[in-house]
Image (cartoon, rainbow, N blue to C red; front, side):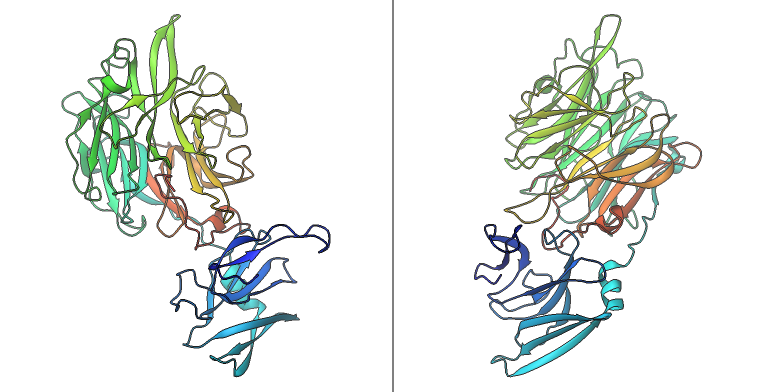
Length: 500
């Protein structure tokens, strides 16, 4: 319905029009001008024609131009990218719509004083091509390959997109072998074209002598674009079981990842160096919450009962890194983990659990990560005991859009194969959408959101075993859902730091 509030409003009736829900704004930005909406007879989806003032197309505030068309596959909850039908400096209003065989007929007034009426026919083929065509499959691009730059193996990917739109791909450059805690540099490559091509490798933190720099975990500050980067220093391959030996490092970049500050050791602030061994962050990404808190997922070992006990929690900063604190542990066993902020402001941690279970451990915090509710197992997220990526994609804002969470891992209970991305619409309670990105050997992964709203995933992969290369693939929401859902481009995805 037409309003003067900058959006078309909508309401619903479940009793044949006798009563109606309270009108709420839709995601269709518009001047004070009527829109028309009808159901497409051959596929049941909704078609809307209106004056799109979202900013995707040039327009004059208050004027009834341009005239655009969009479709919805979810009963009007979200709308596709709009296509311009008319954009000349004129007024287009009072549209009527009807369907005749395989065409849709539109009639509308044009001109400042509605002095003319125009009739336009859109064919079924035109609608199918612009809105329902099969999206392209993901294309795998190698970012790091074993043996390049005199490095034995590249492992443990982390990806993030800067405020300028640069894609950063981090990983461990294991110089002598694939084994954990062997001499390792922390490295990065940058892409300026959404992951299609990549620049030269840069060393972010060098491992000196036998040192291993491990567990990349970046986050972007939503205010000034500073890149906060976290990783761990292992003095040598024998240090992981020694309390206080492994150190938590933090560094920053203020120039889009071109250069980096010297690492700062924050271990004393975020851990108990007397009892904790093998202190680790992530790996994957950290987040910044809507309050501005930087939240970094972490885990560590403690010796007890004849075997190593694993615990996970988070550490955080409310002052952009001037000081750091840590939250309490999630109950029970758990190690590598990722965290997202839910729509209600709580935090959800998704955790690797390696003691016989075939699913993922999940815990929720209602106080910013200080304490955690009793965890539970999500057996639908099958795993061969491997790291996974967990990321917010979109967030419903003031009734507009949908909540969407993403999850990626090798979806198998027996071996590291079948890199799969899953989608949740109910804040991680269920995962109705799952699609394989790569069916072959695959292991650790990291999801990120590209500037155009498409999804990127950086993952370990190969033909015979999953550590031959680290590759990047990108795809649309439309591809992920087999055309059942797509991103309405006026409601942009949550940034890679999950802050908005």
